[in-house]
Structures are given as C-alpha cells and as structure tokens.
Image (cartoon, rainbow, N blue to C red; front, side, top):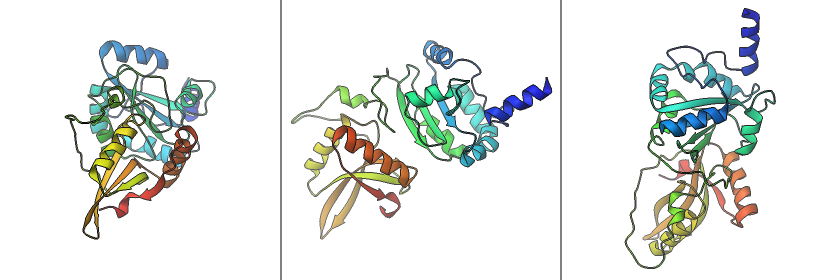
Length: 257
C-alpha cells in the first residue's frame, strides 16, 4: 500500500501538496469540480504542470505548502492540478482545450466557468495570492471562444460604445515588469481611446496604457499584457497576426517607468 502511494505521488509530480497547512487540490473529476463551483458560486483555478518542468517542481516544493495561500485559496477557491501530458488522467485533455503551451500555467475561472485570467511562469506564494485576490469577485459565463492568454472576450465586448457618451473608466497602476505587445502609439488621446475600444472587443482585461512625453507632447502607447516572458509575448503576437490580422511589437515593460 505504501509503495503504491509513493508511486502515485511520483507520477503526479506533486510530492508536497497533501500537507494540511498548505493548499489542497480537488480530488475528483474536473467536471464534478466545475459543477460544485457553479452550485456554490465559488471560483476555481487550474494549475498545469509537467514532470520535466523545473519551475513546476519548485512551486510544488514551496508555494503549495504555504499556510497563507492554503488558508485564502481554501476559503475562496477550488483548486485543480493537471499534468498537461498525462493521458491516463484528464490532464492532457484539459490542457488541449485551453491551449496550454507553457508551464507552469495558472488559469483562474469564474464560478460559471469563464476564464478570468491566465498566467505562465513561476509564481511565489504572495504572487499566487494576489492572482487569486484580483479575480475572486469576477463573474461571467464562458463564451467558448478561446485565444492564447485571453480565452474569453471581455465583459465590455458585449457593450460596444460608439460616438459620444459617458463611459466608466477604472485605472490600476501597473508595475514595470514583464513584456507586452504594443499595438500603437498615439499623440491624440481620442485616437488612443478609440484603439482601446476596438481592442476591448477581442481581449480580456489585458490592455495597458503607457503615458510618456516626447518633444513636449503627450504620447500614449497601447499595449497588450503583461506577459511573464518574452517568449509568451512573442507567441501571443503570432496568434494575433494569424487569427485577427494584428501585428504588434513585443516590448520590455521594465523600460516603461
């Protein structure tokens, strides 16, 4: 019995996830968890990993044993761990459905099943808690239209503002970290707003505006992101070009203070 348990944990690649003080993943079918989440109006997330992924192993050994993460996630979320290459479990099937190509990958869902955010790369416990906190109140039904890094159109896509009018704008400060895909540079703020309105019809909560000044004039850079790695930003840009005809420029957000 002990040998079987050891082999099971070894195959899963998650040797430290069973500790009571840390994060506990749902033990059952993915569809069962989704049904429970909808019934209880509780958000959920999926952690995609592979056995060869070194950042995944680091996360397995560190953040999933964090007491603060375990407490917050346990109270507000269902968590599901999926080996993205496993065919004897649902892991590979789920990874293919959500176009998971990089590992580790975290995808956060509303209780109804809409993707609210996805992010690849290593996260420490504080970053993981922040990811969950900024998505915990989001609600919405899935559309079934998936695009790498941004699976569902934004809620704003269902209300397309045109012409004059009164609009609600919410601004959050953005750290100068990671990478983005620049979609345009404008000296006229009205044209910048028009570009944002256009992009809202396609992308979910991922539009950044960099404010700068050149030769005494205000400049507005419209950027999609952030992405954890240049590779992710480049891949996303390739998908944009293939599916929507957009051809952005990958930029380093660290240079944008």
